[in-house]
Amino acid sequence: MSHSIQVIRGFGTSLFSPLPRSDEPELLDAPEPDPAELAENFRDIRRVN
Image 1 (cartoon, rainbow, N blue to C red):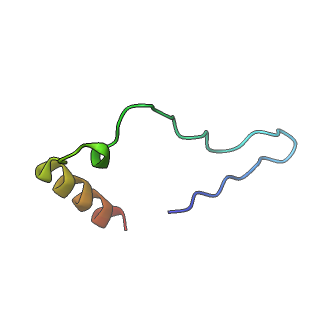
Image 2 (image 1 turned 90 degrees about the vertical axis):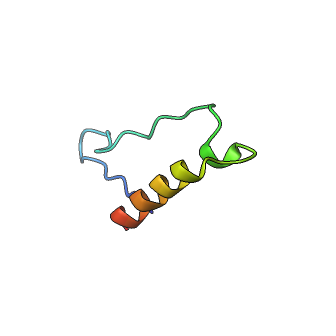
């Protein structure tokens, strides 16, 4: 998904702030991801797509 950032003329600020970053491991970084959590994430992805 691509996010476009628009700049408000004359203000030099964007309408959307950058997403927060984290050093925490992500779901697929685990050696054996939790199947229930994966299924929940895939449901969320299908819902927004």
